[in-house]
Length: 164
Image (cartoon, rainbow, N blue to C red; front, top):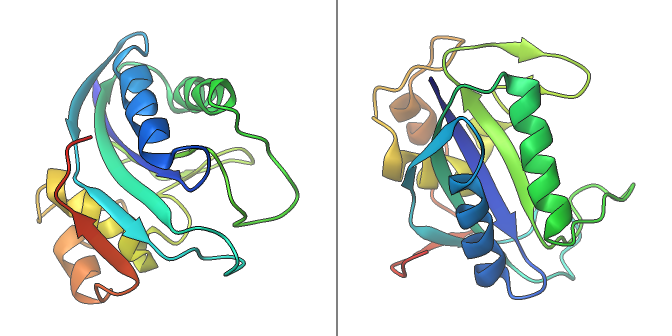
């Protein structure tokens, strides 16, 4: 089993319910065990500003699935939650599930890039990740989570103390 960290985001169709449903679905992925879930965060959208704020969280999943099989499972969950993949990048969505880290692997394939693209610069990912991962968590490039947090201000996000 390897520890994978999954980023969750939603800003359409009852976002908190979308994340709760996604967490239940993550817990049901074959050959995997849901290990932890961060607090809920609200964040400003990256893309067009005329969309609702995002609800974000990070989940830790211990899995025996190879990375691409895990990606397929996550995309099936997204689709079950009404996710429509459009050409517009950073647009509104019912559910977005991203593999942020997969063990200490560095993966650069057409369908999957780990660590996730721009992980180091996204407060809405790093701060929820820090809720459930050790501060000395080392990324494949050698940087630690605490180093990334120090370089990424807590701005444009809000931590909510509500259970998911």
